[in-house]
Length: 271
Image 1 (cartoon, rainbow, N blue to C red):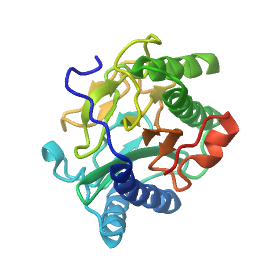
Image 2: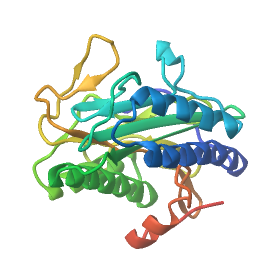
Image 3: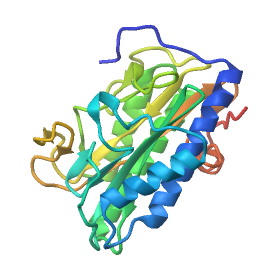
Image 4: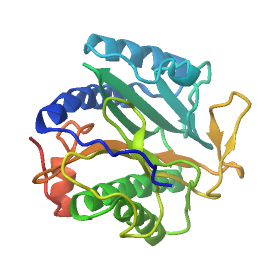
């Protein structure tokens, strides 16, 4: 579950380089949030993201990855993750998860947001809020915990406390650095005190995926798009996070996570 290879740690200088990729992702996602509206296609958002990444001097780490054809993943409503951008037109009330990654000087950033298109239902808005809160619970546990399982347990506990939701089981977070996906896996549920140690210099992509129904997933014929088997709405939030000598640094948040970490009383570890 947690991966078997060596867990890479980064020096302070390397974390500063990773931050550059993280900022590209953060700024691209903010632009996409502003652009997502009824009548816009997911393909148009993809083209916009491609240009936004390029103009910041970065390249996409999604495009061509195992044959993936987009620079972002666009997952709408019952689509959990890995939705392929195309001619789908966004409609008022849709819930859109956008996953984006970038490379700067060989270092990777990876993050995801869930966007409310127009006016969504109260249940959809609360689903997104619960998922984002679980992400930050996991980030807080990365700062204060000792092992990867502490992150997993914090995410699961946060979701469970919010109500009757499904935590999608087949997908996990992951290590990140000179590659987009590295050891260790970061499950979104599990026991505290288990898994690899959280040491200074560890960088992880933490990414809960939560649904209004089943915790399972079904892959469509395109080989990528994962959907809920019961057509329940899904949300996805993700950040790339570094553990430093003085706390955690959210590399894909514009402010490094300072505001949200402050609210949670968690040490902010920007370099």
